[in-house]
Image (tube, rainbow, N blue to C red; front, side):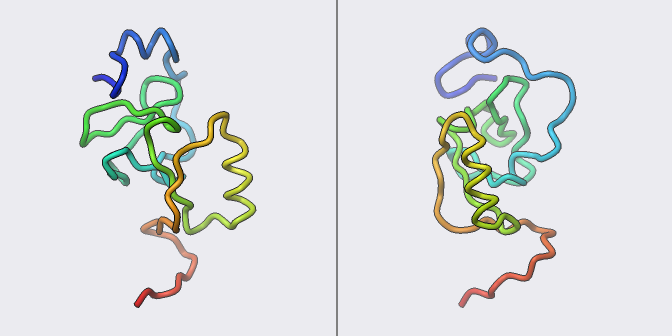
Length: 111
């Protein structure tokens, strides 16, 4: 489909296509959600470099310009900081922690 700003031809020309194979971690495992807040099985890596595909919105979103990012529960502060420094563009960060469904780390109960 398209991104909020570019059609598929423009995305391909500007960013190029992603290489063969799936990256080890899916977007939701790293704490990403689309601009509308969809996460989990709605997200996968787009066919275009630097983009995430949302099945619900049916759009390609740039991981830093469009998507939101929240620290995952399994990431310590230093690991989170290191992950952010490894990204070429600083993403839009949501405060708090995103809990991963099958995480084995015990969490404080809210309330």
